[in-house]
Length: 456
Image (cartoon, rainbow, N blue to C red):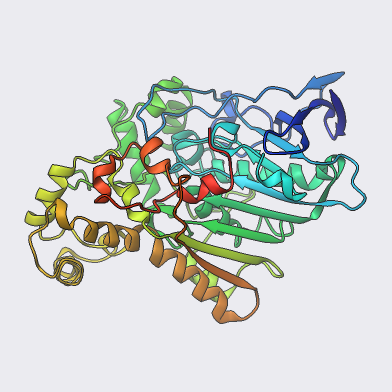
């Protein structure tokens, strides 16, 4: 057992033998904010309270309440979930070590900082401190009424609170608070890239890595979030639009009511066999408190830019779009691709232009990707290419190009194409069947993670 002093008290962790060579110190389940329960539900996180004596840091804290969207599990976790984990190769290094803080993905609905998906064993061998975090998910983390009580972005403010905790305390673990890299995949990458422009994160990190996601992807930005919230309230039997009554209603709901929701009808896309993401990051209205973000992301990127002196690495995997088949009825998808004239409309366009223009756009995309042929399982890979473009590639390229054009920050861009026995998350975690891949090895969305973490 080993002990470390942090602002709130003394933590007791442990020295762990790394099965991949060497040893590291592990500190799990560290509270970085007060439990967001009771009246704090949906609100910005509050600083953690100090404790007396020695606090054990040998067990993970509860994961944030969720249903895993990939495997449609039963609800797990707790509303009291704002904990992080620190893994360090040295507690008293000769020179403070660089720090990498990982923000997990999961469509803003599921995931955690636990070591089933984000173990530190690979990265910690390279003399870097690894921090993994939980943050509020789904409605608990991203519901927005555009009111002072429920302004939105609670999950993003959790991430900021974790970064602030690291800034104050990581030197006690041997880390350099002035050399922090934030990195994340999918929704984690959308989060990372939003942190590039949030006024709350300035000075909290020096480098950022956005893997398969960007704030310029359609799924990272909220579309009419108050209307979304009102639809959820009606689905749950509450029909008032009074702000106070709505706030009281959502705060009084049992946890299970907030995750066992049918979200498919919320934005009017239920007719399409399509992977939607329903909780995302909002432009906050002013209520006198800290706003995580306000404005149009493109205006901010082009006119203000990202934080000064921050370097960005961004990119995507070769076959991102296969994730779009997760939980999808393939036969119905193929039928809709062949019969629905407005199916192949990129989501960003579908949300912002009239139906008459959407039909014209859909014809052009079908012609480009399918050459106006009938769509079957034999050529469904063309649809995967379309999904890759719509969900990930365009957003990633837009982000990198806008920043590079300003010539103020270093930008590195990649396409991940590595194929090995570690490319298994598509079948083992996302539940996709191997016959979808036409007997070829693919580099699916999230396949790069198994090269960074020893996925259990």
